[in-house]
Length: 158
Image (cartoon, rainbow, N blue to C red; front, side, top):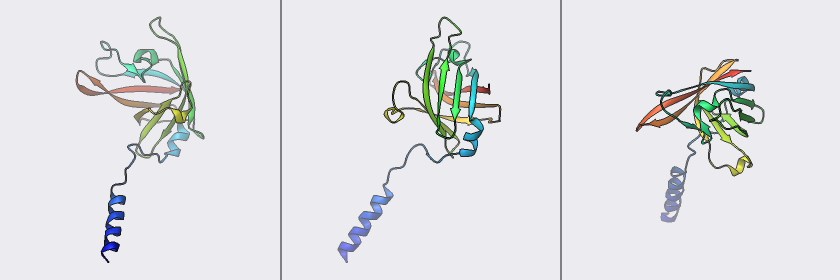
């Protein structure tokens, strides 16, 4: 009987200590279908944006993303993003992406570049707000002088 209780206790502890993922992978397919298509990033807004430089997605200054083209394919959660040089201080950049929307209202993004998606171990988890058939916004959090502030990326359907 003691062995049986020990085994039950061990299994209970093992189940209770099961690790959980920090990001839900359950999909919000309805919203994903709304995002299917081609979009242009029309604005990047955050407190102090006139005075501060923020590197977005570890790629370039946030201002360089204004005018960037993004495509989202909802049936396989792939797409592409491309920065076109509107300024001499901005470099051109393009990359395949993978993305999905989870049931927690988070937009999960991986910039693949020259790798396979499964080889990319980091990505971005952003809030998605104001979703319509023609536009949406992604919101990330940044550290500005020791304070957490929102940076908002606005997209418009092409």
